Length: 287
Image (cartoon, rainbow, N blue to C red; front, side, top):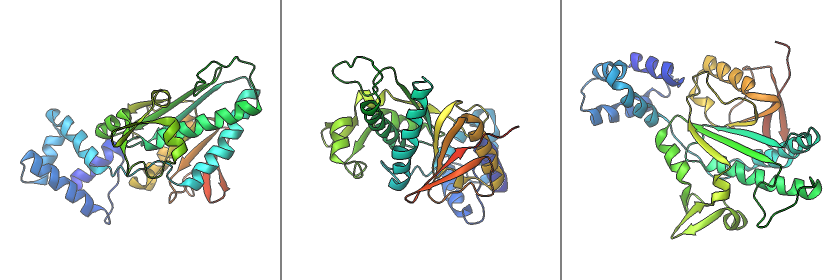
């Protein structure tokens, strides 16, 4: 069991303390049954062998909870929509930089990055009404009017959820928090399901990423990484926050889970708190 705990930690940074050992044991027993093995040690030997790479990926998939929803933590999204995006768009227009780059780290089945895309599209249309760029508007009106460019990278360590996210089809229960206005503009009704429209889909790019590695997307204006750090121990959390710092543009923003905090993990961010929503802004420090 200890060997398996260490292997999982080494592979993806997930830490299973005494409170969560039962969960790990339950998931391991499922995989043992699937692989027709009778001991943790023989399973460990499989995972560290050359043939065990695919099984290790399956185990990691089984250890992620993947709980997500559209418009999750509304107070934080209001802060993102009405304060962060508003300031970012004004600042970028002033510097003649018409590109927005964001990252949803641990995107699960895609509701978070698609929510980000809907809010960015909204914020852009309000911004252009108030600050015309002088570009001729074509019809039908594009979701991201020129000269603006929006790129939202969405990543996860679980291939199964990434495939669901890429498909972008959700049932009525999953759509419960999406209001009529957003459904009308950004989804097509297909039978009893809702498919994300092509224009919104084109703003989001899904990819496999392991946050344990150093090869992470750079030059982001905003990073969402919500309810992911709770899987890691303090040492791994500190390393991850440091990576996020390096992955953000100067003055960029990091949004983490409602029950998560950077307190004691980093002094390189300022906390922003508005209407029960929190975010962290990168401080420029001399290295």
